[in-house]
Length: 610
Image (tube, rainbow, N blue to C red):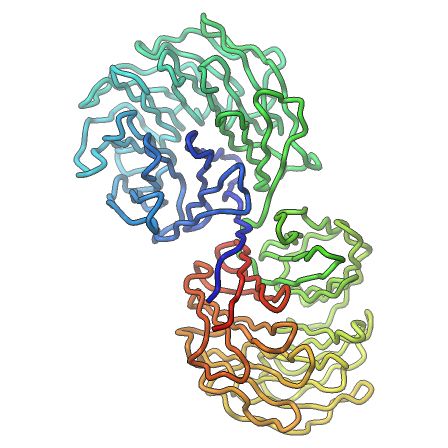
């Protein structure tokens, strides 16, 4: 069996020039945010535990806990809202098509019976309120002419709904059933977020015009605004009230968060400006915030989640981050007692994780090229990208040394280092292989067939090259030349991955036709066959350090672990390991395996042989 030990969750999807609206459940200290088709539940006091809901058919945009904390309503770009359980495998309660376009915000009524959603739609339908159990409408929402970016339910009776959006308007509705009451036009740019105070006496709107305006909760009359003195210098993207309704937290494109004291008459003055960690680049713009119990949560454009203490804002904040895009490669570095895991995503970000601790920082690279894949040894990272270049990067703690860039003249397909002398690297291309020693290309060999995968023995004496035709070609390496020794035929589709076992006595191969094979290196006979349990192409493969297990990861979202010497029917299957497919696998030790995938998450599993 395999049990999930840790999840290094993805960060919220962000978009330049737009805020994101995160939410939480004060009772459990959990927060909700979205990335791709996933809704992520993170516990602020247990960051290595994350629960992910992945049943939306389209990219998700917003999610909220019901008032009792038992249900979650989540919405996506197609205008669909799904309501599902927090516990019991996230059982689906209801699904409704609410708007004809993207939903940007939604809120539950305080009694948990109704939901209001706002966003983009056809005609004038930018807002809809409905019963959570039947989906029936509870009002008409006229008055907006453009996308409605945010909506809020008054948390006390009599119920009211307020909305705001790209037409610079703030609209107020009475009900239920809800109908238009009045419109306020105090802002001169997009109104990005509206929130009622928990006691229901006021609501606040924040805008790209750098202003925050406060209104009476019952009548929607303007009562005050956030002082421009010491105010934000950029668009304000989000706002969140303190539990006692006396303060608000705002975040802005000016890269700061501010805590404001709200007076009885409805004006706000800055109590504290919070500076979040970062280098001051565009990625450090703040786009989301949440005041939850004693946690002040901010989210940056680059996905950094920072937690400040509300009771002691001077205390050093805790920051954690991760990937926003598909994680395509993994490596495990055993430094002293701590296992360090490196993961790289499609957008070129390399993150270091420490087993048992989690996020440990991003590797600062001098060039920001996209990374297709990488190989790593203790002191060095070798990467290849979509630009025909291989880069050798020395590792110096959380920094990368001076990069050596090698142009191999064609698109790399696979990359392998010899573990005993890592200066020797084998790179496969469409038509052959390139051998590197250090940063020098020592040979470029056209093999005369379409190459799809490759491997090099740990001592550099042998290479295996896989073809489009499913054949494995074994070459001996002498100096900088390859000599073909034999051709192995077993696969019925193009090879996708080949890896030697750590002791080099075996090698394993996987193909697009979902089959994996383990071979004996000396006899070149099949050692483990009929490994045909995936339902789609095999993307990655890893050996345990003691050579006793081999794991495969597939486009079918599963990881399968086989024990050498036991029939494949004894396999251990991790179903749904990564939504969208598994793209990275590595063993930390004999029983711990790390996986990564399309869902931008990295997961650590403990394997117990059957």
